[in-house]
Image (cartoon, rainbow, N blue to C red):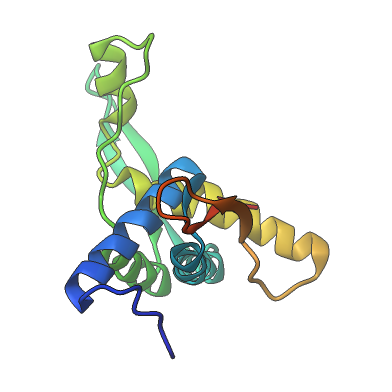
Length: 170
């Protein structure tokens, strides 16, 4: 598939797009030049579509554990299926792994408890928030997918006159 060069060498262009896709998926919207926004939109749509296609591929297992009093209890564990695991690994190769940030009014203990089971917060957000939201939207609208991002032109940037755009998740 043809790709814009964005006047950058390959390694710098890939790093720039990877960084902007990560920022878009983490924050929900970013402002950049129009040409970059179109490339970021294409990549982000592909990532979200990959997550939507594999959202239902999960396995449930029951494991036996021990509670605080020493009594055996059954714990239901939800694991990724083969397709979802492959999709997760492919997405991890395409985006950076930003660390989870502590909220302004959150204590260190509460932050540790909230994030103790989250190893890759952006990947969890893609699969647990975006994939579910967009698969429901596709079912309601009876569409096959796509159109997860919106690019809005903002006008010329002050200084160099480059066309700016706002890219956001729909």
